[in-house]
Image (cartoon, rainbow, N blue to C red; front, top):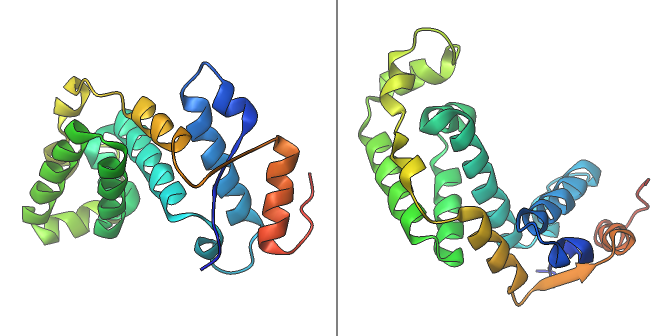
Length: 180
């Protein structure tokens, strides 16, 4: 395995907006995904991916509740496992306990109904979608963005670079020139 780093910009680390460092991580991962030929995972630090997925979870839940997350991931338990690993590593105890409860509920859900749910339109009359919603998420006091950002900022494998330096790092990893 390569000596992988979590790559973020210097501006994001010094920003007053805690989301900026999370977004910088996402941006670097997306750059690698767009430019790589083959599987990008070998070029991305595993904890960078966990941060990425925790953010995806948060965005999806805020946008459409647990049902949207289930629908968009096609009931991907591996995804949920990665999100829970990330939450555990960043110390998001309340969010982790909540997601564990949601995944346990999902595993008990009727498989035929779930399969039909992911094969139909999300909007419109949809009793499975409605049954999967859980608004308890919105009562959680833990700031998942701040926990994610602080975890990244204090990570032992963090590499803080200028924007140009991030491109150069991506080029080094991929062994090719990247258009700016």
